[in-house]
Image 1 (spheres, rainbow, N blue to C red):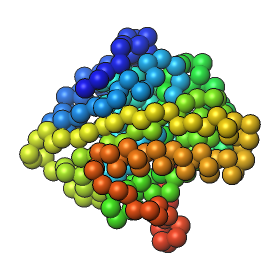
Image 2 (image 1 turned 180 degrees about the vertical axis):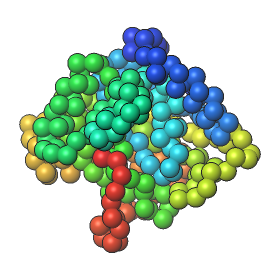
Image 3 (image 1 turned 90 degrees about the horizontal axis):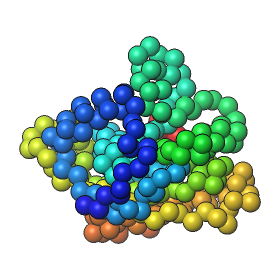
Length: 248
């Protein structure tokens, strides 16, 4: 496992992060033995947008634990209303989660990007927006959230892929406690080049093009992990009469 050197962000995590890590990392270790590949490709310092695939309800824990082990603090987007819930709101603020509110997506992305750049921190955004509906668990059509934030702040998008969680938490299935420590692989990809889209960051065409580049990069990483090719046609929930709900 290649691991990036400790960063100023990692050396001074807040108390909430330290408590969560002390509980979650060893607990999740019961279910998964995570192998991390190409950890050096995640920036050791500065802002980033991490874009992972999403095929199991439990895989946010894989992403969070792997990100922590690499040396960066795992932060996700969270609905703004959750920040007003007692206890939960304090935990979200204490771990620096990034609020998502209803409203103009362009201006919201600009605010989110500004916070990331100022704090030299990262955010994890699932570009599919929800669990993949693809029958083979391949990445489906993406949403523009990750690219919108990245273009708003000139922040790199880092594609990642992971595979193995379906062994103990199948999509829409029940958590399996035995056997423990199933192998899960987490691989970090090269930043997705969006430089040619920067001058038209708010256009729908640019956001769609950037999102497809991100989804293609994630899919290529997952093909590497699975040792097989993804379907040529990406699954599109809109064309299969399935609602898209969940994360941005």
